[in-house]
Image (tube, rainbow, N blue to C red; front, side):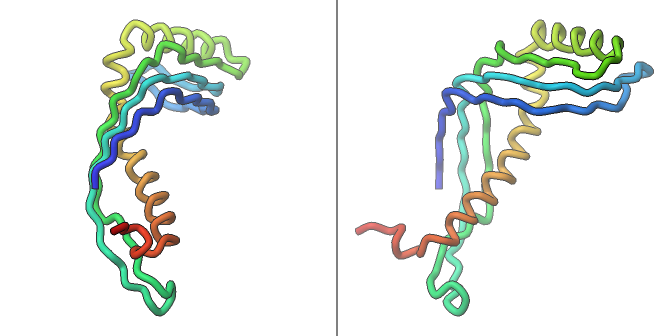
Length: 143
């Protein structure tokens, strides 16, 4: 099974809470991450098996057992991070991190792409397998 998808527009909005450090510099802050990412391409390939669960489901269905995914993130120039806590250091850190990202967006995306791929694959397999359980295998095959 091979799948190719182009996501023309992703609208992302999430809250963040950071508490860590880079070298000896403490990082602590909360805020909102928003972004519009365009033209992201996802290539997925996988294999599966037919599950004969005739006692419980009364039909056979497909289950994805192994899959690989490759993501090519599109334009990320419309990403914005806003610090919401009152700590002035957090606001300065967000500004510095945002400037760093804008100056190094390609390298930053390359660094986080494996995390996106791994997390996306786990979520996608759960969704696909949930959907596949509800469709009898004999209804997927058309003569």
